[in-house]
Length: 294
Image (tube, rainbow, N blue to C red; front, side, top):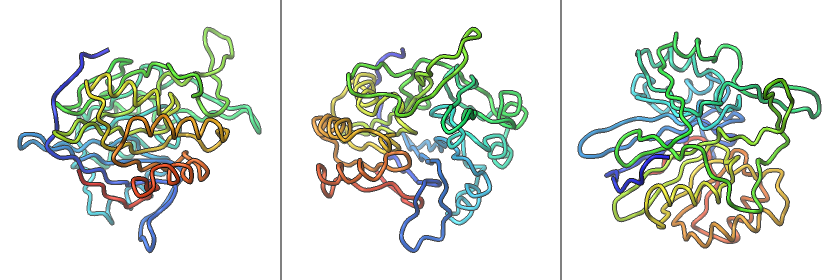
């Protein structure tokens, strides 16, 4: 695991390019999945990091065009985990970026088999067309590590998240193949992004939080060397969680004292309603087209 960092960004802007829902009277296209563009500024340097690509590259690129975001501005891509609704069309997005040696950061296990058995056997991991060779041919360079890695000073990944809570779980029955045996998949490839802002604290950006959003927050605070959580943005995968788990999650997050939470995608309506009950005006549902400036 990487050494703690005290580096900070000057500003961070998060643009929701893809999400399951869209803003009221929005011209954008929604899709099941998530893709967030981070514009990070530090010392006069600006870097654009795409976190996940959702599952429909055509819709993603159309939204980018409507948002006046040129694909060529993207400097690197972070894949939070293997699932198709976060990775499908990656090679096509890289071709649209049109550059060579674009860093693609992910966990070493991201290309493993990952499947469900209900209502039938179905692979839901990285799909054909987005395998290692496809990514490299399209201009990407894979940085596969289970450790935290610095994207630029003040912006890092969590690396593989330590599971310490007793009430969080993957959130759905998932399986993989290990040494010829079918086994439950603990989604160890689930990673998030941490930004540290001067005088504000940290911003935690997640994909699905299969590692547990509380676990992710604990690891983020440890890596960033601060307990001040400014914002938590992304999917929390509580859509099928029990009411008890949702309540424990909201109370644990409340103890962290975040200034704002914006969650969507796999979070689920019941969890969003609970977060609104607990955090009031400090909570907002994540929606395609949102621009969060910090």
